[in-house]
Amino acid sequence: MKCVLIGIAGGTGSGKSTFTNRLKDAFCDDIAVIYHDNYYKKQDGISFEERKKMNYDHPEAFETELLLEQLRSLRAGEAVDCPVYDYSMHNRSQDVVKVEPKKVILVEGILVFADERLRSMFDIKIFVEADADERILRRVIRDVKDRGRDIEGVVEQYLTTVKPMHYLYVEPTKPMADVIINSGMNEVAFQLVKTNIEKILESGN
Ligand SMILES: Nc1ncnc2c1ncn2[C@@H]1O[C@H](COP(=O)(O)OP(=O)(O)O)[C@@H](O)[C@H]1O
Ligand SMILES: Nc1ccn([C@@H]2O[C@H](COP(=O)(O)O)[C@@H](O)[C@H]2O)c(=O)n1
Image 1 (cartoon, rainbow, N blue to C red):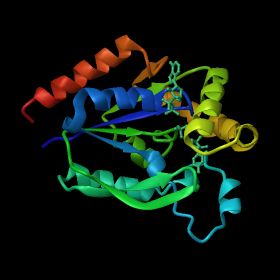
Image 2 (tube, rainbow, N blue to C red):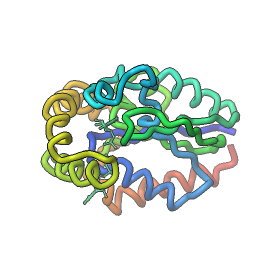
Image 3 (cartoon, helix red, strand yellow):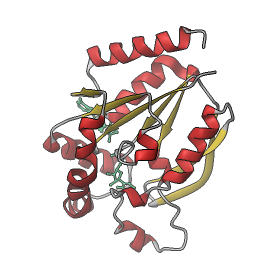
Image 4 (tube, helix red, strand yellow):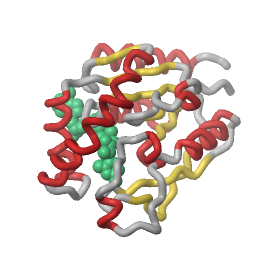
């Protein structure tokens, strides 16, 4: 079975997960979805207070080697146990999620195009963009509602690490994408990608 890997990158709050989850809802178990965030390095030996202060927007924050290894396994037709990240603890949880090999695999994350080894595995590269002010406003609401954060902490983290790392590592990957979409809610972009995936799933390879 030929496996098609689709990378979905973009800044924090741009709408990557929104776009990815719409595709997942459309195709359910016919496709696999992997989130780079689940591959943030394990930080068991560091206190919660220390973990809180770490830079989570630098490529070194991720165990990308494990993601590469698991994507190779999936391409070879083997199921993998993906790690699961707990944002409220700033650490990996004890859980794993079994992901079965599929003909189409979506890989989503802020930095999935920043690592050349990962970038070169993608057959299709999509970048979701949104203005920085919209992204941070969405992030404040999401982080407080869903990720156990307070407003002061979100603002401090944004100014010290998220914003500078975005311009150093995320934004420069935008021109590397095959397609740049202006919103995770863009219906035309969604239909184009959906049709493409349908064709891949219908093809006999
Ligand atoms: N175009 C949009 N308009 C309004 N809200 C949006 C839009 N895109 C995403 N959101 C909301 O913003 C938040 C962050 O979006 P998300 O898709 O999780 O971004 P990302 O995965 O890129 O960080 C979510 O609560 C989502 O519902
Ligand atoms: N412990 C952590 C780990 C990551 N983050 C932030 O998550 C952002 C990436 O996820 P998106 O859904 O927003 O793309 C990234 O910008 C990290 O700063 C965190 O806050 N805490």
